[in-house]
Length: 356
Ligand SMILES: Nc1nc2c(ncn2[C@@H]2O[C@H](COP(=O)(O)OP(=O)(O)OP(=O)(O)O)[C@@H](O)[C@H]2O)c(=O)[nH]1
Ligand SMILES: [Zn+2]
Image (cartoon, rainbow, N blue to C red; front, side):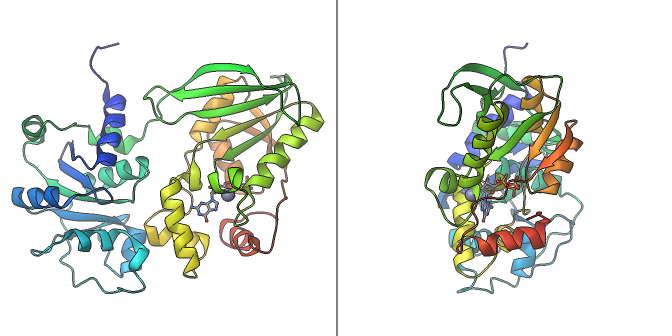
């Protein structure tokens, strides 16, 4: 292994830079995340050349802005651009008070890869999916001059998974079973850790009762009534305890992969009357941004390739199968319906195909 950081390690650095508001240089230019943009950096960026604001197609639809690049849109920054204008374009919090933010000058050349990679990096940094981009002729020189991290655009766009490594496991007696064991997995790029709770010693040659649980701080820890996550987490563990074996992956993919801050933005939009899917779209996200390769890889590292999957979500089954895990049976997990999450569960059934 080389002493210097490789391409995937540089991506992890770039994510940290974006979260601090520091620009990141890519193969075709430089980008800045809108969420962490500071006024002086916006001014500097504009002094270097004609910068653009890149938003996803979903955000563009909410703003009624034309989409020329299929999955994203690029808007030339107006001459009198201000930090508050840039933020209002990216963050839907004030859409209802301030619906019109145009007219806009669209960028329509075929150089959209920088914007696409920038948005993808912002998403993986769990920020709003919106970036400022400035195309550059000599990006390496620019990176060197300003002491910025430089990443390969193709590596961002390929979204290769950083391999998950087992860090440690230890016995964990729980109320549902005293034969519990917690495994900690860490991606090689130092990113977010994920956990596996193994109950009993399941036979690796047979399908294991499994649950892929996505973190929900509000539901799992606080007992939120807006979703069914807490009861699903505890219900799944209880069933594994009764059967004497099973594996529950606790995946840190909060908010279906958009992060807790963005999930709370979505909750604020839900208080304005939008449903769970519409709220994600107004923020510029797909309705489900989770990467199921992580769960599949952890299962394989634990020695499992066949599961009896506890879920109501057929898309989860398809995505696990797509990642090479055989789902021999769907085990329904219908718990925790209450008057405050009834509409949320109905929306999941109507729009995401959940089976309740
Ligand atoms: N973006 C967003 N995420 C939410 C919302 N409500 C819950 N979540 C997240 O949704 C995830 C719940 O996913 P899962 O319990 O795996 O649910 P699922 O994919 O619908 O499928 P099941 O296996 O049937 O539970 C957690 O990460 C929650 O934080 C919401 O309104 N918006
Ligand atoms: Zn939840």
